[in-house]
Every structure is written in C-alpha cells, then in structure tokens.
Length: 522
Image (tube, rainbow, N blue to C red; front, side, top):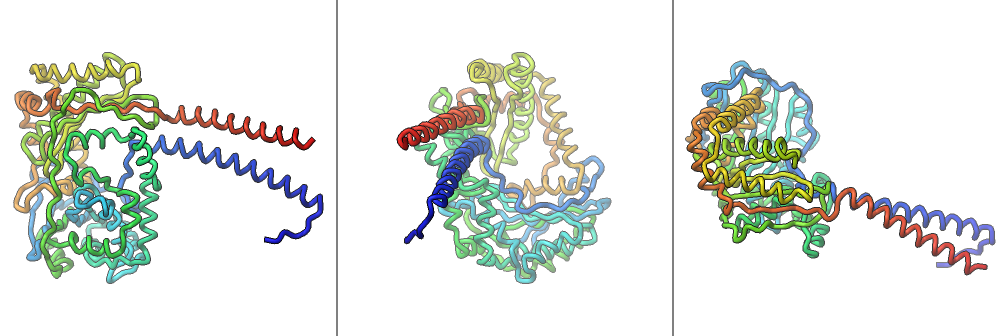
C-alpha cells in the first residue's frame, strides 16, 4: 500500500501514539490472560446446568397443609395414543401446575450428537404451528404464570404454572411447544450460541489439552468412568463443543421425530381440577397425536469392581488449595427396595462423618454421604474437602468409620434420627403445588403406568437397623469403593501469583527493550 508523505512532527506524534497503543495492547493482553486463568480455575468441576432455559416470571407458590398418603395419591390414565396422564387432585389449590415430560435426555445421545436433547429443548420455544416465538413467550407471561423447561440424563420436562382457571391455556401451550414446534432454521445458530453461553463458553479444547498432559479436573466423572462401563451416561447434559457446533436442523428434526411421541411422554397435572375434567382437556389438546414405535432404551452401564485400594489421583485446577476426597460404590436402581434403606444409611453415615471429621477432629468444614439412583443403576458417594497436609488423616477416618459399620457398629439411635430427619425434610419440601409436581415428575422414568407412586414417609419408616446393616454389608464394603482425590496444581491464589510474576517479567522485559533502544539511538 502506498504511504503518503508525512512531516517529521506528524511522524513523531504517530510514533508516540503507536507506542501508547502498544502499551495499552500489552496491558490488555496481560489482563485478559490473568482473567482467563482465574476464570478457568473458577469454572473447574462445575458442570453447567441445563435446567434453566429462560428466566422465570415471579408468582407466589401455593402453600398447602402437610402431606398425607391420601393427599399424595396420583391417578394414572393412558389415552388411546399411549400418552400417560397423571393427575394429582388438590381441591384447595388456587394454581394449576402442568408438566409435559418426554422420556429423552443425554443418555439417549451419542458422542456425535452430544447435547442435542438440551439444544432441542431450547429450539421448541422458538415457534410453533400456531404461534411465533413472541407469542409463545407471552402466552403464559400475560397470565402472571411461570414457565420453563429442563433437560437431564433421562427426561426433558416442559412445565407451566398458571391460575387454576387457566388450566386449558397451559395445556394448549404445552401442546403447541412440545408437539407442534416448527424448529425454525433461522433460530438455530442463535440458540446454539445461547447454549454455549449457558455452558460458560467453548472450553472443551482447553480440557482436552489439559488431559493430554496427564492432568484432569472432574473427579466425579473420573470415578464414574472407573466404576461403570463406557456408555452414554458419561456424556454431559449440556453437550460437547464439537458436537454442538455440528448439529444441524436436520439432526434436530430427526431426533425430534424419534423421541417426541405421545407414547413416550407423560402429562402431569397438579391442581384443583378433578381427574375426569383433566382427561377431557388432555383428549382435546393431545388426543389427535399419532403414536409411533418407541426408540430403544439407553444402554445400562455395568458396574465394575475396583482392582486396587489405591486412590485415583486427579491433578488440575480448582478454586482453592484444598484436596477433594471422594469415594464411590455402585448400588441399586431407583425404585428397588434397598433404595430406601440406602437413603437412611446415607443420612446416618452423613451425620456420623460430620461428627467425626468436623466436630471431633476439626479437619473439614463438611463431609457428606449420599445415594444416587437412576432407572437401571445407582451409586453411593462420600465426599469432603481437606487441607493437603490432613488428607491421609481424613481418608483414614472415613475408612475407619466404614470398617466400623462392617462390624455392625451402627447405632439404632442414629438410624432413627436419620429417618426422622429424612421424613421431616421431605414433608417440608411438599409444602406447595409446584414442589409436589416436581416430586411426581421424578418418578416418570421409573414408574410403570399401573404402578402407584410410593409414599416416602412410609417407605422410610419401614427401614430398620437390621436393614441398614444388611445394605452396608451388601454395598458399602471398603473393597467396593473407588477412592479418588483431586490435588490442585492451579488455584485462584496460584494463578494470581503466577500472573503477577509474569506481569513483572513482561514489564521488566519491556523496560529492558525500551532502555536498549534508547541506548542504541544515542
């Protein structure tokens, strides 16, 4: 490119400006680098949630009296096209909660389409056969209602909460959004980018490079992959970057046609509308849907026994210098009789570990025991965080507690207290129409059409000390647990320190270059 003639003063001013711009660029580059390192450390071990597609409007939650077995009955019906309709009748409720649940989630995916269930959830709101996107968004909002959707490993749940008299409006809205969406092609790139924003950005390439150097960051996933055979269960709900970038509108349409079927869905209605009226309305809005062959169920991960008692060490970034300790043992699926006993065992062990590690030894802020169950398998977890120098003592205390349980040292008092705590928490969680709907929805993937939903307090109350001792022997033996530790090598503190050192080195180098140039100009 040809450069016009310039005077010396013009050249001098431009050099000064260029120098200032280089300095500003250098400061921004260093600042951005520091922010990137700190952000990465903060993002570690926090898989992005796929359960908040859009902001919810505010609406008072309907408070109810304490639950009883009769109050929590669900009547189940099936339309001729296979759509299940679950109705929980609450005569005193002033709101109607409607959930339309499709039995599809990240476990139905492959590596090539990882994240498609959640992306499809986003896309269903962008336009229907009857309404454009703005009308979809405003339909429930203008009633003062609440609406949203979430995707997890097994289901995608679309829901709306409206004043009780607007039940039919909510059902029509769900019908349009879920079964009459048009998946506009011109909205795909925008929703894809929104998913990446929800995900926190495109960072998968960072983690793949980290893993190439023998580092890692996700202790829970690491243990799950050790404890269970490779399957779609290990895919993140939010999806993988490469797969999300490649998903096309045709991919979405094919996936939608395979899974969004009336005979693969459950309509749940909780409110003051009698069941017979709900069935009439459901027939009006969903009765014309055509069933098709169901897709195959996701593969069940097979449990594997640990080959060694040595901890699995994961080294990578974290928020703090603390070492995370986690123990994981395969157990049983949701709905199995031992599930209730394991819940009580987890609550009792949780309190015992908290007393031992925090109150007696002062090693940790908290120590937790929990049980997770899916339709076809489950696992038991123990987790805590501890100073690096206290790692061995904390792990030894956990193992000693488990060993004592194997010897039958399980206090009847601890078991009774655990049962009462579980029942109390559950009753408190059932204080609203929406919370009860959430409880019922959790049974969609595991409950048969003609199977009643268990009453939680009764199931927990049946558990005895002998039951807890039995499941402890069956599932909580020391040699059944995978043990893992996450040992941080990069933290916020170390990132800031390293950044400051790097800034000083760069600044010193820049000053040296500047001084050398000044000296050379003499």
